[in-house]
Length: 344
Image 1 (cartoon, one colour):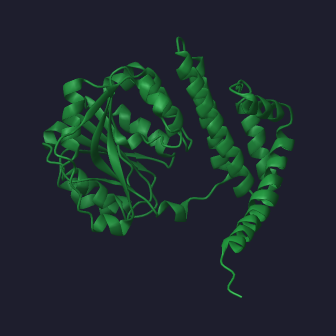
Image 2 (image 1 turned 135 degrees about the vertical axis):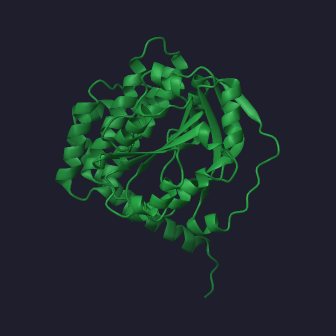
Image 3 (image 1 turned 60 degrees about the vertical axis):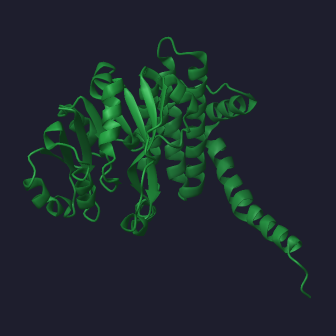
């Protein structure tokens, strides 16, 4: 079997049917791939929406579990996979018609550990009116995983744009950290560190559905602590043997970026001081082995946080409230008034 497609499902009754329908619009022989659906304890009618579709096809495997999150769902799906290659699709996204097969052919012909394609970010109404044609030729850039890592924007750890060689993931024991959100960051970093044969293709095949996630997303103490674990797990990769110096430094800097994002998010999105302290305490305990050392800024922040974590988050919170929320908007209003023409 060529390909296993893994899809965790949780409360996506509006999107799951078009997601799976798009897979059957790829022109692939159903004997060449399997779809592994992991019902992550969905509480809506997601499974009912696709019941008829599942019954119409013989290459669908449905796995059931209590709600444990995407990381565990993906790990479970992978443990049942038989394909030479694996792709993991989010259940609220979909594939562009007749685009997966060329990408898979490229992965097989190069025997690549990782094959990375392009994607479109579209709102619901844009998806309905989509008319898209890829370039006639797929341009391919072959790289090592380390080269990809050095180019990686740590905010763009998208697992769904990659076709993974299953043997590569298995031999290197690369899995998602169970039970947390933000599991994609350590996963992608580990893949890039350990992959040898990779290729990046100028070929769009995936549609990331945007807009609806902002209405459901909210930061919480649980998500904050998950972020702490993600940071710690990514830092663990710096202890791997024989890392190239540039790769070592890149991972350290990426962890510092994640740390900074978490501190900023705690300061802006956590109104309860007890929750802020709780997350920071958890971060302090989880990151005792972390040592930010690349530049004066990192060294100063590393020292202050390690010695005075409560004071550090309190100062950061006050800075956000006074400077960013009050003074900066006032400054921008004043600047606009000074630059606007005098109409009096």
